[in-house]
Amino acid sequence: MQLIMKIKKFFSQEFFKNILIHWVLIISIFINGACWGALLFFVRPVDFPIILHYNVYFGVDMIGAWWQVYLLPWVAAVIMMINMILAYFFHNYNQRIIAYILLLAAFLVQIGSAVAIGGIIRINY
Image (tube, helix red, strand yellow):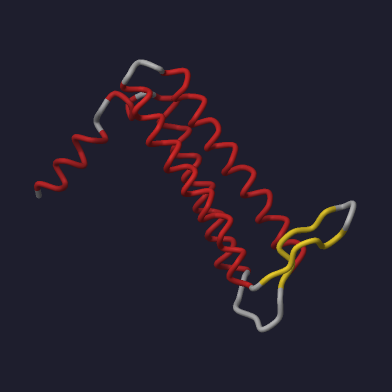
């Protein structure tokens, strides 16, 4: 019960009440979850290497094991968490512009990750 009260107290701070921060975090988490869901739905364990990167100029330039495709949303989630923590600290020190830029960067990383995962799924499956 104590833990639940501490979590509620943490999320009731001014940082999470800011509507811009609130919606950017929700949309970023949703995009990352959609990336994980798409990968879990489409990527299956296989014995042969899959295409991890395709370039229109050079064609396939990176292949690897099926599990390596899961590194992309994991790295995007780590970047989102780091940027969220930094934005939280900057927001508490009244550096709101820096906090907004960090959260926007995390959002753009999620968008880039979703585009890359969509390309990987389209090429391989």
